[in-house]
Image (tube, rainbow, N blue to C red; front, side, top):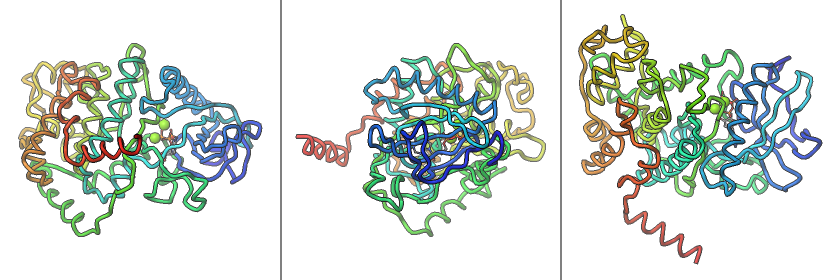
Length: 420
Ligand code: ATP
Ligand code: MG
Ligand code: MG
């Protein structure tokens, strides 16, 4: 991948943008770029330097991302809206061509890493609440103030705010104290969605949370696996986080793609091609919140004997959320591929219903009251009818988001104490 049109090879100490930024160490990589911790000599602080591959289509994608990140930065001068801040951008010419570079505020590990670090056990509800508050603040800002749809919300694209000063920890410099290795797609390079899908599929295999006869054999497997592993403390990890990766963002009134979102976080209207809006991000948010609480993906569809991944996905949704109203089921451009005219799936005929509150109690052992409260928060977000889903703003007001536990009160007292 380090060839013409591809990644730019970086050595520690390399200068960028006329010497303003000095590369320190690799933080991660993706399909489009490598991301480096860099020292900003002008502000004497650390930043994340995202160096795009040089080929035309990657440059195009970077310009797109810069447009959306700039809009987000311009509307949030106080940098309080839980969206990663674009600090600067420039072109860098190297042996493989001309690379667009984005200078981003330096953040920590992704929520995917946090979940993995926690051995897929699920986080404490108070931690989940704090994370949800950040995500919802970000979404509310993008949606209501900017008219922007993120279109690829998932744990991997939400990064914790780093609390470590890279200067004080030169060895592990830069990461919140979870894992040292840079993050990226294992094979770095190769064909784009493919690798992401592969990686997610591998994960999905491990973390299936599912239900009917097609999948009853899997239930329990994850529980056993995780209980045999040593617990890890998340004490001291700051749960504040920010939304990143605007490579797939669009405007509500100017959309670029019909097929959006990463499979497991994809809303039903996207599968059925019924048109979409802000509420697709809310669906992905709901899937993400479930995953934070349980450590398992909410929906991990697989193709099976005689049916495809999409139809399995729709079946999984209905097993959890009840039958899709006929009007919605048959209303999309792709509906005929999956539903008959009665609104029943064509190839998956028998569904085993397992409602969310029961799933949380039976499989994930949440106490009844907690399960019911969380299910009450989540269920409306997972409405089949997109226009019935609550907005991010409405979710922020929901009682579940504003639970006062003793722990919360303590934390607030401590805060007051520190500030006072
Ligand atoms: P993708 O294939 O996911 O679209 P990409 O090439 O667009 O990848 P990003 O997802 O933006 O790249 O970043 C790749 C990795 O770099 C992230 O997963 C993360 O580990 C790290 N990273 C990105 N931005 C930051 C940041 N602001 N601070 C710290 N690390 C970051
Ligand atoms: Mg990404
Ligand atoms: Mg990207």
